[in-house]
Length: 145
Image (cartoon, rainbow, N blue to C red; front, side, top):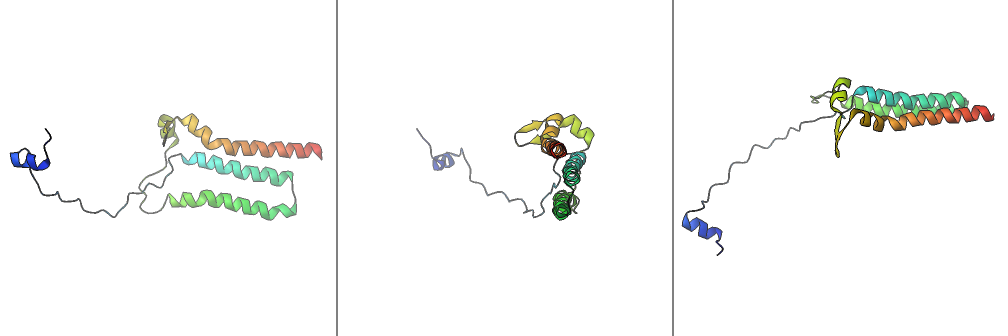
C-alpha cells in the first residue's frame, strides 16, 4: 500500500519544517587565470614560432616580406603576451605551475591527468614541427636555387 506525504504527516512519521535560510549570495568570483602549464613551455612555444619566422625571413630575404613577417611577429607576441598579462591581473591569487611541480604531477585535463611528458609533447609538437618544416623549406630553396 502506498502512502502519500499527507499520510506520513498524519501518522507523525514526517514533519513539515520551515525552509532553511539560503546562504548569502556571493557576487565575488574566484578566478584562476593561469593555464596550468609552466611558463617555460609557453616560452619555448613562442621561441619556436618566432624561430620559424626568422628561418623563413632569412631563407627568403626579400624587402616585400618585411612587413608581413613583422605583422606575424606582432600577432605571435600579442597572442602570448595578452594572456601573460591577463594572468597577472589583480585578483588572480594563483601562480603558474613550476617545472618541478609539473614534473611531479603533470596536468589535469578534461579527460583526466596527463603525464608531464605527454603534456609537453602535446604542447610542443606543432611549434617544433613548424620549425622543422621551415628548415626543410629553407633547405629545399637553397638546393633548388
